[in-house]
Length: 403
Image (cartoon, rainbow, N blue to C red; front, side, top):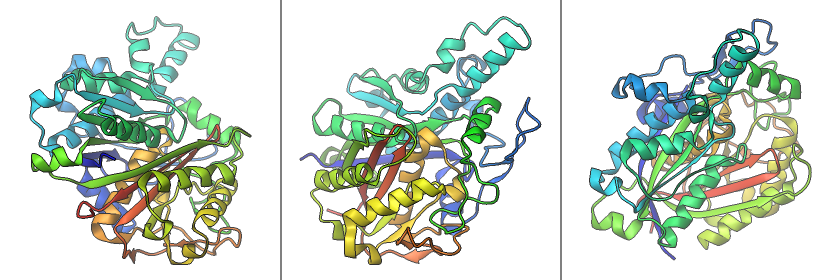
């Protein structure tokens, strides 16, 4: 089977607008979660989020380009610029029919949607002529394609919080089957809008205190925003051109609970994990670290812990598990990509990042939670994304020196 290399990686989040800053936040346990004031909504009950307060790098785009972009597309473009700048590919190779773009997003142009509705129903103003071009879920993928001249397959994946992980898995499949020579993959989300925030409040899944994944006293999640983009290539071809290989993408598994849309089923999640292991042709004992979906909600954490127990059994006691959302927030459709960056950073540093705010372990979540930063021995990690709709995805990634 064709081995797939990650040759470029970029990230834009509240925890860091570039890879170095994100890495420092992740490994030091510096949270980007803070007070969040919503425009046009002063009476929101929850006031915490991981919001990017100031964006750097937008000066590389013209005012005309930015006018056609929702915030989620801008974040994707900034992360893509990092990834493509790091991969060492010549511009004419990127701008070819053999370069595909697959980007995941749960909502798409949420800011444009919210602004448009306010303009229409409150201000009774004419809508921006570019409203549709900005809000469509495929906008970020299309903007990356146009910016770098990528003329291969271009599309969006939208499956809630599994969107980015599925986009990465699809991109890996395209490399393996020869549908593309390189695929720009990842996810982007910018849905910290008044309507979006109030919708999450209505579900009663946002924390009143702090996001505490797998803790006995956890009471909910904290929202975030951001983007992470990767460049995927055939590993043999990447080595031949002496590319800077960031990591090796080994396996991908996805499944559906086919049950309740918002109540996760551990059997479905376990199946995605098993399929990822099968795809990578790995025994479970070779996994050295798990970046958990770990939202901090009671149902999700319990279901994920049960799924991990089903798959890893006795090995679970020796398997460090990190949940990084208390650092960068839950970026919804971009979560799988941002957390794959976290898994790769952990591999490169040979550590499991801390799970912030962890207190007393939940007896229903019998995991070796990395409450503090700890050493990881094995060079292979798993990253999980389990979404509303019962859609599950798991990715397996290895250190660049692994073979």
